[in-house]
Length: 218
Ligand code: TMP
Image 1 (cartoon, rainbow, N blue to C red):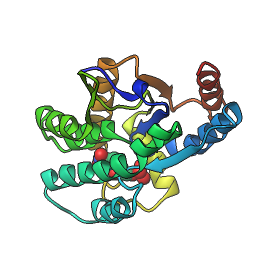
Image 2: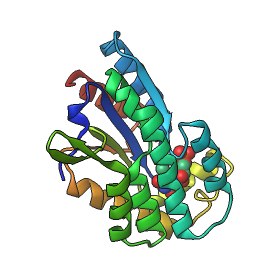
Image 3: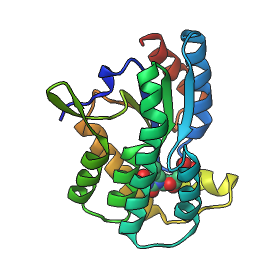
Image 4: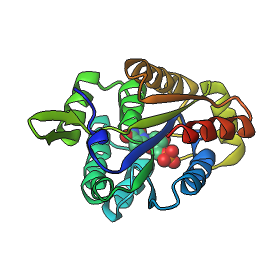
């Protein structure tokens, strides 16, 4: 199925990567650079799970409580549905720029790659929550560009242990994050036109330069 975001006046970006790969460091910079490049546009910086009052409550449970892995996947998509219908789509219809810290690629990476749910099941959820009709055609609502911060699971674990108290996901082992990373790479290889690969082992300055170059081409 084709992706829909090009039919909205607004623009939708997502940032992805395993925990510790550094996407949160760069999302703020990206947002500030976009604001300079498009001073007339409203920029909405948001996140998943979360981004709405209900989504933030779900985030608390998802990041701290143990639960059945299907419940986890369903709550991720429940948060996404609320986020899409109350924040993302209204913003795209107004012509705003939306930057989401994580979106559906995280569900494939963590719930399929990491937890072991089937890709077929997640395809069903993705299709259910993200299918839109435009005229006679049916599309899948996806970010126009997804920045994937790629880093080995070992280095990401070292970075995490140096900087924060782990949540439910962050305390999982290197094998889990290797599987998450592999699923991200599979998704990226399926949609190369949507993904911008960022090598997170590079310096902050190099990554900022790469982001700046991308913004200049928008
Ligand atoms: P973060 O937003 O601080 O990076 O953390 C959110 C955590 O939730 C992260 O470990 C990835 C996980 N997650 C999933 O497992 N599935 C999802 O669909 C999303 C959006 C996040």
